[in-house]
Amino acid sequence: MEVISVIIPAYNEEENIQLIYERIVKEFSRLPYDVELLFINDASTDDTLDRIKQISSRTSKVKYISFSRNFGKEAALFAGLQYITGKAVIMMDSDMQHPPSLIPELIKGFEEGFDQVIARRNRKGEHPFRRFCSSAYYKVINKVVDVDLEDGVGDFRLLSERAVKAALSLNENQRFSKGLFSWIGMEQKMIDYDNVPRENGETKWSFSNLLNYGLDGLVSFNNRPLRACFYTGAFILFLSVVYSLITFIHIVQTGIDVPGYFTIITAVLLLGGIQLLSLGVIGEYIGRIYYETKKRPPYLIQETNIMNGVTYGKNR
Ligand code: UDP
Ligand code: MG
Image 1 (cartoon, protein in one colour):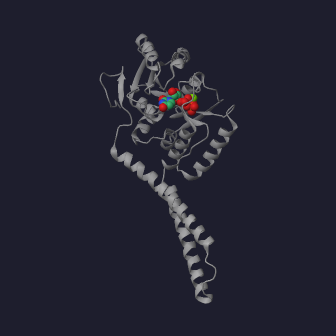
Image 2 (tube, rainbow, N blue to C red; image 1 turned 30 degrees about the vertical axis):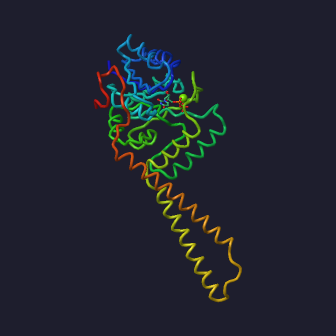
Image 3 (cartoon, rainbow, N blue to C red; image 1 turned 90 degrees about the vertical axis):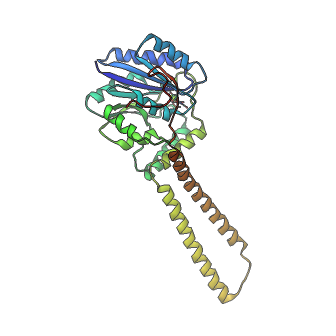
């Protein structure tokens, strides 16, 4: 039987490990495939790793990689993709928000020959404010970036071996999976599902996390924000020059009248603001260059049952 891999990043999910394991195995028991489950423990501070080890000691289907510290879900997914051996891979969260009941449908898409079978979630039952923010974000971002980003489309998807290789060939350090998977393209199929609340525990996304994630999405794919700064700056500069010329001519003709406190302060503030904004955007890109040039591994492995003593490596 062919093997299909499932990657599950887990950060403080002790109550969910057994549950998700059982649900996935149950789905696969009805399918003509062997499952390879790869848990990525993102340095959980609770009992997550022990729970995973308990399961993996009972079955060779379950493998795990445990990070040396919290590297984030993006790094966990990347690590997972590097170590799986299946003909296809499904990535899913450990909190049951990515319903295992969709697995057969995902695999059906794979059998039909699609390289990416993407699960798309609606935002049923989500807080209206969050709904509003995300829909506004996706409207803006799709105007700006080169890749297609769709609301409700995340990393819950199946990738064929080919797509996995493609995703791994993008070995940038600052990963924005959603965009990277979209960037590689290939034959894609969408499957819709209803948003479900998390089973146990709490979301790890704070508001500031979400803001940072949003910014990553914006600057990960092209330098248009940098351009926008340049053009805004140029436009403001042009206006300032015109304004100064007019004022100068006016002074030459009629002499200095009331000292223009208002105009000066407006100009200073406006320019100051534009400059700071531009610097910020430039800084954002330079920051990225800085991280990428360091060529640090995106994660470090503390322990795993895949190979002994690996600290960093890949088998693909
Ligand atoms: N996760 C992770 N590392 C982190 C944060 C989250 O591996 O630093 C995992 C988490 O265990 C879960 C998935 O990523 O399996 C999604 O996290 P969460 O449910 O908190 O995000 P949400 O569903 O709220 O977007
Ligand atoms: Mg969740």
